Length: 415
Image (tube, rainbow, N blue to C red; front, side):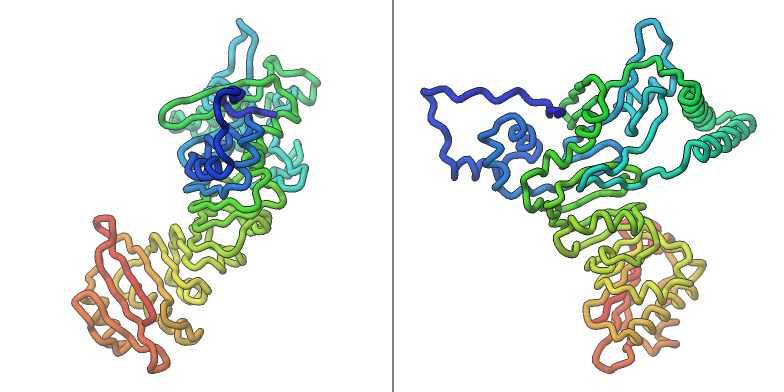
């Protein structure tokens, strides 16, 4: 088992009175979650108390081989330790400097994505390609990087060439049965803004997988963990473990590039719908996405052609961070399509749509188009209302400056 970096608890002296159980529970509730993880791992008495006190996190962020709990980060990687006097390839120097490889490394140096083995393992993107397919892809990538480097001299292209050559060399070594010159070490790096600690352990596959399941160890024995923000934007190709009986009560979640297949793996652990969901992808056909009260979409380039499908989404509030439109007429067409769809779907009061438009168009012109074509009634210099199909509800539309200079915020709500 990989221990978190904290000294072992001292045994209580006979002269010192132990803290009453209820008092210890109260103190535990206000302890930093990371201190609780560390203490419960080393102190059996504290472990029993810790597991019955609700655990509440401001933020849980999964990014590659890093797990951040609030502002404290845990990173698990494989460090390539070369013998003294042996030149270390630059690509391995950089990987070691960054905390080691996030992927499994065999004795020949081939990197492989950790696979789901036991219940509770979640892999966000297992590479299912055969060796032959990966070698072919690497050779194609290498030629592209070489071509780019020849014409541009780009440092990024040169580094890409080095990575491809290193991976191809590892496959050649495995084919020829030549073991790598380095020793594999499991490295656990932990840090916050004040300090950084690094621990290394002799490699074994079981130890590496135990370390990758660090999050499961933190949450083991708990029924529910409360999380304000579960940030999975960087989780694509990550590997985590959650105790099978655990439920996550999440207020907001950022699913980033995760696919429906990934969300299917996460769904059993969520204790009900989330309040806010951020996504980068534009495939919204999943229960986790549809059940969120507020859906935040990072961008939507062809929004004019998708206005109807956006308006049909069941979320109470949809916010799009950025859309691309050519002129005032396109903004009007978008507004018109949304209003029509809301009326057809008989959406009720409180339904909202907000959109950031990356330019400042002539707002009076847009309002005049709405007034003339949709029989809108002006409410102010920046707002107007339009009647839905029934006489009972109106759509209030407001156009004004966004938080960022040079952008316009469009807000629509059924009142």
